[in-house]
Image 1 (tube, rainbow, N blue to C red):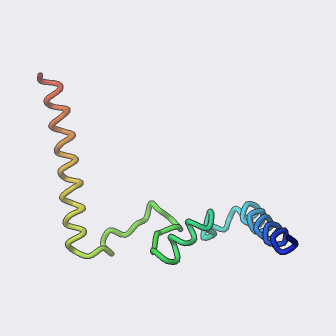
Image 2 (cartoon, helix red, strand yellow):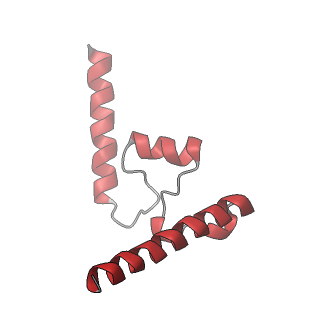
Length: 84
């Protein structure tokens, strides 16, 4: 019981430290985000700066194809609804 209480207190203290230190951007939000960052390589520091050039060429081509298809599809739907 005492060990569990100590673990909870340590977790609470850790969360309070993270909340107090607003300038620290590399601290994970929770354990799941920490897992994504360390094990799966999920970019947790700045999600707006994901480097698309770092992906392998087939994945980039597939991504550009799907994005282009969605863009053309949206334009087609807009044009078809306007001129119906």
